[in-house]
Image (tube, rainbow, N blue to C red):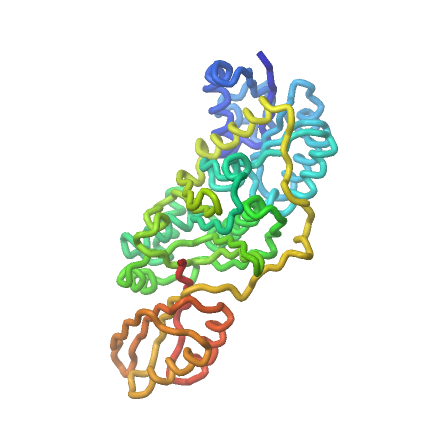
Length: 425
């Protein structure tokens, strides 16, 4: 039986979950995968945390040199996070001829070209299933399950923190501030939640997933990003009344015109499969030319779900001699021949505060019409003190047309746009 030694960098939530799975299921892996996997070393600055997770004191390394210089270490698992020490440690591990498994979406999104180059030079594997959507095997599906397809689109809920917050706002009528406070209490949100609520986390993941799906480099810088911090209870409630559920969506599309990649809040119809994905769960909806629609669903974060994805990569690296790399030229920037679409098409939700007087609605619809924005549904209600509120859903139109219309409506002097949200088709 093949014997493989693993080192884990970082014993936080994810590192601890990975250690637990590798140690508790060691005999199971030997029986089902015909490989004996042993955690031989752990790099953790807080030795007490490592000991609390069950790591023997003699297995706790004090520096990366101990890891890369250990001939018994075949695979290095990076669970540190960020792009500082994590990047340095991954590079030196690859340069030392170790296979690397990482859960670090920011690191892989920003520096995969550099990491992959180092891996190729040493003929070792670089695996990153856990970087996107936790325990949901979306990367393995794209690489090893959907190769027969030209993928035209992927759309998903790929951040559990924001999905929990929006679920709380939808189901309980909580404000954004109340829902965020609850997410922090339960451990869904960090003390500084900006990476999640401002859409950075989802944008890193979309950069990775769309690169794989469309077989071309999609840099993080190309992702249009908008978070959920400005979403109001009124928006969520109005959407529900019109038959929609609000989600933070990651959307990637490929057509003859080019590629569009965007992360933002968007309404989805209640009948759409993504509408029922609630709390901390994630899902990715993929469309291929041969298979049609496929949806992958599961837990998008957590010690054991993410650990599950990491261990799947560890087993893959341990049981494969040939290691796959990108199906495209993985460079720092996008291919100069690939067009990225900023003026994408979408339907829109607009909430407008207006002066409650004759002719106001006509002025607004005139501006919309001149900008090729047509209305599908509309709600109008009096707010008192000479004010009213209009909520409308548009037909699909261009992003820049809506931006121009919003600016002109705000300039009328009789109306103020309170919210602009996309509506997914």
